[in-house]
Image (cartoon, rainbow, N blue to C red; front, top):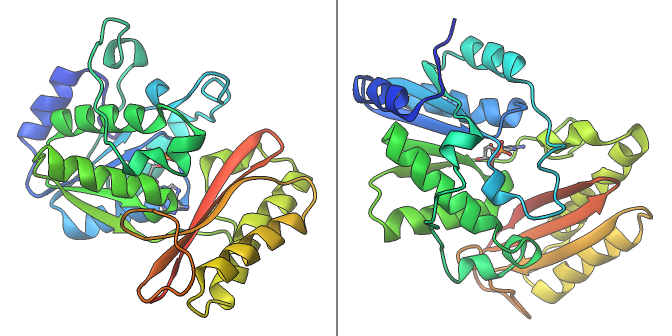
Length: 277
Ligand code: AMP
């Protein structure tokens, strides 16, 4: 059986004796092929691989889906074992995020926009927990998905600013055959919501397919695609600088990123795609 460590001290001891380089894949569980693509990338590059499973309460706002977030630890462990993960860190929320904790790690600027604007405090929760996870697992390389593109930029900034000494590797978005980005939250969609959720991908396709370097036209295409699908409540549909996430306007000389978020039934979904320079 794959070792599952819940205590910080045990996980730290395991990490200290692990063959280097150590690859690390932080997750919130309810694993799918997107997560497993990160594990495979880590396995391909690193002498040992740790995955964490922790539904981080700090990154959920009031009224968000913390309680409804899908959880299936036994299945997750089977999947991670089959992929050759060496050990799993799965701390308990009461001990890993105790009520007595008084420290927050905050990345400024990048977190003001998009997900940060819609989910106040979300990235503080992410940055705080990723810092703690890095302190426990002490990885050489940590693997993150482009599915959460803004999160990836926030982690890179965090690692650079705090000299965490971890290489941040990124992996492309893994999609269902019809294009829907894989997400643990997809499991909560009814069949009709699942069909409507494809609007996020359709919108990105419209922006990527028609991309002629004009950011305003691409943004219009994103928004028109959402408007064409009833029952999808768009949150944002932006064309942004891929490093700063500032909105772009007019003709863009370099690369850009299209980013979308929308609510479909009980679930809020996000997706993004590169617009080549
Ligand atoms: P989560 O469990 O949602 O916190 O995600 C854990 C990691 O898996 C993050 O780095 C995500 O960006 C990544 N991830 C989630 N879904 C996908 C996907 N469809 N393709 C690639 N990476 C993903």
